[in-house]
Image (tube, rainbow, N blue to C red):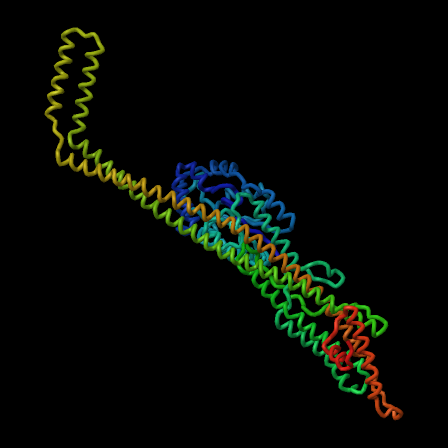
Amino acid sequence: MIKLVVFDLDNVIIDGEAIDEIGKLANVEEDIAEITEKAMQGEIDFETSIKDRVQLLEGTSIEDIEKVACDLPLMPGAEKTIKCLKDKDVDVAIISGSFDVVADKIKDKLGVETVYTNSFTVEDGKLTGEVTGPLVSGSKLDVLKDHVEEAGITLDEVVAVGDGANDISMIESAGCGIAFNAKDSVKEIADIVVEEKDLCKVLCAICNQLTTDDAETETVEEENAEEAVETEAEPDVEEDVADETEAEEEAEPVAEEVEEAEDEPAEEESDAEDDEEATETEEAEAEPVEEESDAEDAEEEPAKEEKPKKSKKDKGLPKSNFVLADTMEGVRKQKDEKEAEISKVADEREEFNKIAKEQRKIRDELNASLKENLNKAIEFRNERNEINKAVEAAKKARNDANNKIKSLEWSSGKRDKIKIENEIKKIDKIIETRVLDIKKENQLVKNANDLRKQLMEIHEDESVKNEAQELKKVSEEEHEKVIELSEKAQAAHEEMLTYFRKTDDIRTAADEAHKKFIEARKNASAKHEEFKVILSDIHVINKKLGSNKPKRRKSDNKPSGGANKNREEKERAEEIFEKFKQGGKVSTEEILLLQKYNIG
C-alpha cells in the first residue's frame, strides 16, 4: 500500500535546474551547468559538486535569488499530481539537494508540507559561498529512512521519483522507483520509466500501483465473493498437499464403512467408490494451481513492472452452503452436475493459465530485447562521447598551430612590412583624391618613395617562414580530423537515438504484454476461487453419499444375502446404463459393473 510519494525538486517538480538559473545572476551559468551535468551523470560525487557550485555564487544577492525562485516554472502536471495524491490520502514530500530559498516558494505553491533541502550561508544579504544542510554530505536515502521511521511506515510503502545520480539510492530502496526524464544510470535501476515531461504520466503510474495494492489487500468474504483479488496467491505446493490430505481424510471413513459393510447392497459400495473418485478428481484438479504460482512469481521479473506482494490469506476451502436433494438419487444427480461444472471451470482456469504463461514469455523476451537495445544505445553514446573528446583534442591542436603561425608572422618582420604597405597606400590615396599645392605633393611623393625603399630592405626570416608553413600544414591536417571525427560522432549519435527509440517501442509492447499477463492471472485466480467453491460443494455431496449407508442387518431368517446383492447390483448396473445413454459421466467402477452383467 502506497503511503508516501517522494519527489526530487529540480527537473521534476520544477522545469529546470534552480542553481543553473541562479548562476546567471553571477555570470557563471556555464561553469555551474558543467558541474551539474557531471553530478547528474554520476561522474563526481554530489558533495563536491554542490560545494563547488555554491562557491562560484559567492557575493550573489539573496534578494535577487528569491526573485529568480519566484519565476521558476513548475513541471507540467505538477499541481494536478500533488493535489490528486493528497486527495487520495497519500503523503507527499520533496527531498532535494537544491536550496530552501527555492523549495519554500514551491512548497507554498503546491501545498507540500514536508521538504528537505540545503541552505545557502548568507551574510549582509550576500552569499558567502558556503552551503549547509542534510543533503550536503548525506544521501537522499538517509533522509528518507529518517522520515519513514518518524512517520511509522516502511520503505516498501514509498514511491520515489527522481532524475539524477543522487536519486539512485532512494529509487532503489523504495517500494516503487520512478525515473522521470532521467539519466541512463537511473533508468537502469528504476521500476518505472517516464520519458515525457509531464508529471501526470507519473500520477497514472502511481494510481495504477494504488489500484493494484487495493486489490491485493481485499479479503474475499463469502457474502462478497464476486470481488476479485488481483494478486491473491494461488495455493502453494505445500497447500496443495494439505488440500489432498484433507480430501483423503474425508474419504477414509467412507472406505472403512465399505470394509465393514461388505455384505451390504452393491449400490452403497458404488456410492463409496464414487466418493473416492471425487476425491481423486479434487486432487487432479488442484495440481495446475502450481503453475499459477509460477506465473505469480514471474511477475517479479523486470517489465516496467510494479512489485507484487503475496497474499497471506488462508487458502482453505470456503464453507459450503450447498442444499442437498431430498433423495439419494437426487444427490447422485447433483454430484454428476457438480463434477461436470468443476471440469468446465478447471478447463477455463487452465486456459487463462496458458494465456498468462504465453504473455509472460512474450514480456520476458521483450524485456531481454529492451535490455539489449538499451545496452546498444549506451555503447553508441559512449562511442560518441569518446569521438567528441578526440574532436576537442583536434580542435585544440589546430587552434594552437594557428596561434603559433600568427606569432611567427609578427616576429619575422611581417608586421613592419604590413605597416609600411598601409602607409604607402594611405599616401597614394591622398595624392589621388586631394588637390594639393606642388610643394606638398612633392613631399608626399618623396615620403612614399622612401617607404618603398624601406619595404624593399625588409626580408622575412626564412627559417621562421618555413616553420610557419609546417605549422600551417599541421593546422590543415587537424582541421581535416575535426571534420572527419565530427561526422563519425554524428553517425554514432544517430545510432544512439535509433536504439533509444527502439527501446521506447519495445517497452510499450512489454507493458502491453504485462497487462495481458496480469489480466489472465487475475482471471485464472477468479476461476480457481470458483473451483474451490464447487469442490467444497462436492465434499458435502460425498459426505452425504458416504454417511447414509444402512447399518449391517443381522437376521437369522436370512442366512445369505448373496442373491439380494446380485439382484441389486444388476439393477444398479441398469440405472448406470440409462444414465450413460443420457450423456451422464460414468466412473471406472461403474464401467466394470456394466461389464460384469454384460449390459450395453
